[in-house]
Length: 253
Image (cartoon, rainbow, N blue to C red; front, top):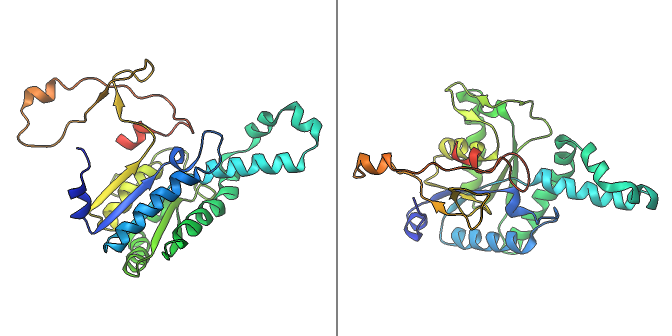
C-alpha cells in the first residue's frame, strides 16, 4: 500500500533502509546531496520524538569507488591506459567492503553531526539471527541506542559473512541481503514501520520497454474481492540493478 504521512506520524519506531543506488551516483561516488537530504528528514523525525533505525547498503559500492581512486593515485600512467576496468574485475566484494565500511559510517556520522545527532555502527552477519539468544544480543544494544536518541546504522558485514546461498534461521526465515536483513531487524526490534528507499519507481509490466507501466501490489485487505485478486497482472523484474544482482526481486521476497 502507499505510504502516507499518517503512517509516519502514527509510528514511534521506524526502520529506514537505504539502497546502494540511493547512496551512490552512477559513477560510484557518494550521492552527497541525496544522502544529506535524507538525513535532514530523518533528523526532523527525531525532533518529533521518533526513534530511527537506519539500515544502509553502500559499503561495497563506496569501497569500489575508493579502490578506483587509489588505483589512479598509485598506478603508473601506462597501467591506467591499459585499463582500470581490468583492475575492477579483480576486486572482490569482500575487499570492496573492507575499503567501504569506514567510508559509509563516516558519511553518516558527518551528515548527522550537522544536526547534533549521534550515530552508532552495527555490522551484522548471518550468525546474529542464528538463535533467539543471538537475536536478543543484537536487539538489546539497538533498543538502548534508540532510547538515547542515537541512530543505529546497520549494515551486513560483507567482509566476514560466510553466506554463499540464502540463509534460513531457526524459524525458516530467509536472510539474503540488506533488504531481508532490514525486515528481520524490524521484527526483532518491534518497529512500527519499515521504509525501503530505492531509485526504482515501482513494479513494471515490462521494465525493458520504456515508458514502463507501473502496477500496484495486492493487499491483504479483507474487503478486496477474489475477482480483483485473480485479475492482478503478471509483472517482471530486471535481472540486475544498476549496482548488482540484488534488487527489486529481493525486496519483494
